[in-house]
Amino acid sequence: MLANQILYWFGIYLAVGLPVVVVLRLLGAIRTKLQPAGEMHRAIMADLRSKESRRVRWKRFAGIILMYPLILLIWPVVLVILILDMYFSSKDHWTPDPEAAFNCRRQHLVRVVSPEAAEAGAKVVDPLGRVPDLPFGHLNSGWHALLADRQIGDMLWYFEVPGAKRGYALVQASKVRKEFVFEWD
Image (cartoon, rainbow, N blue to C red; front, side, top):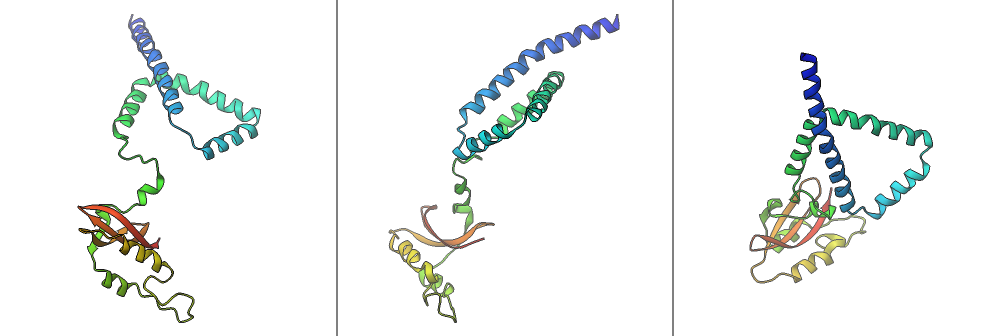
């Protein structure tokens, strides 16, 4: 009698889990199709598919066949993980441009400086004469381009993006308007 009840409730558990797993798989496929793959990603995947042997394809297929029954058994855990992933992975953390993570932001601003103080600290001394005897050396024209773009209300700030770069930025109304990078990590 107890075994029949356990089997009955296990059958209901699996009957509810099967449509949930199918819907989750469909949503995953739709999400994958909606995310644009870059050219490099497509080229790598095409190369991998063309080179993989039948044995590798069979192993991958067998892995998928074994994975679905496992997911069906633990579907509530999978559902919770996916919901948490959707909830905590907001678009605020994702940037379409990977270089945007290295842009100067307000939290990277260190101190306000004058152009004269910045030039005094950036004097390049090269005893061999390979670098121009100018502030920022070969980058001097970029420095002058930054200064030429100054507008009324701009403040010159020294900034450091941890693990990335250092430079000077024109800041107006607490927003970084333009930056000049003189050192990359």
